[in-house]
Amino acid sequence: MPLTKRIIPCLDVKDGAVVKGICFKGLRSVGDPPTLAVEYQRQGADEIVFLDVNASVSGLGTMRSAVRKTAENLFIPLTVGGGIRSFEDVRANLLAGADKASINSAAVEDPKLISRCAEAFGSQCVVVAIDAKRKGDGWEVYTRSGSRATGLDAVAWAKEAAERGAGEILLTSMDADGTKNGYDIELTRAVVRSVHVPVIASGGCGRTEHIVDVLKRGEADAALAASIFHYGELTVADVKRALEAEGILVRKVVET
Amino acid sequence: MMVSIADYGVGNLHSISKAIERSGAKIRVVKDMSRLAGSECIVFPGVGAFGAAVEKLGPASESIRRSITSGTPALGVCLGMQIMFERSEESPGDGLSVFKGEVERLSAARVPHMGWNEVSWDDDPLFDGVPPGSEFYFANSYVCRPEEEVTIGETEYGERFASAVRKGAVCGVQFHPEKSGLPGLKVLSNFVKIAEDAI
Image (tube, one colour):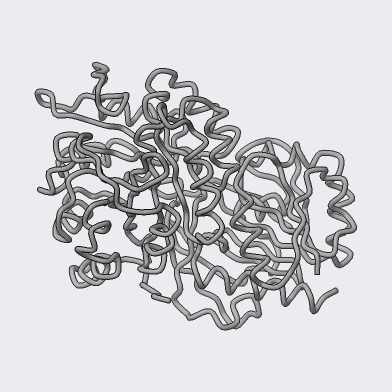
């Protein structure tokens, strides 16, 4: 029996509330993180991601208290990302109740941070998040919430991050993000085929078929989505039933 | 029953603590490893790396090992299971040697083994009342190779490996029961019951 594919609702958190950014712009508020996380757990989510979208403004404290409150009732893995700048930030998030910390800009600016965290906390705790945008035949890595081009090739950076000890790559297509037109299949597959760690595809999910597509043709190990779940369009259980009908192996949904 | 949770100082102990409390046991988080021996029941959580964890156990290892082999119920989760074996390919240092065997790197195409996978078991009190075919959450790059008859659950990922072991009231699970939804919570409450019956 191979590993099941994971469905991961992502909660973009701003000032302690959940939002969903459209192309990193035009944020609006949709709910309370701990409540939503537990609701997704009930629906059969395999994991939850909290992404702090303005960590530098709100300070890390707000997020940590949301994490602490969530961990009380969440018995599936929780990943926290956004504004994680240092080894101490990673540690603080894990101690607050996160199972994994996702590092983005800080990993690009100091790649040694990846190995330092992997050695201390184990690779399974260290997720490297990559925001990539099409450039010519390849994709370029952007940092600082997509505002800064780095000149790095996304596939090469993913490989380096995995070699340095990242246990997982969270790959967001900036071109697809917010469009609801589907994940970037080509980008996802290129990264999946070049690394030996699991890859979570992100950005562009508008329908169940998009998830089917990125898990099948994109070969992703997991699919992350936000708005299709937040606005009550679909439950995680709906999506999983659809995936099963497509012959994709998923964890059985035990709704409670 | 008071369950002592070993704190190696590197990770999330909230979920495992909450999950054990739900089973009706009390918990105390123990930072000073020399205070683990003599506990009513010990849990080694699954956070960190092998080398760092056994270094933290340090000189307390021998007293902990004696305490467990002379009857203190214990549960090792993920890395916590691995440190109950003799040694690991991951890093130097001696494990607790409560179970005979070594810890080796998984031979699969994609490592870490990250996500929900099935555990198959034959009748065992640790899995009482857990629906057969249940999936559990794994996040591991290494697996234990028991050299004695202790395997009670197995999982397939590139190869078949021991995902649960038990010797009396001493148990190890490679998955994270505290992160495995309802089936995981059931395994933890089963462990608490096994431990209570043993003390």
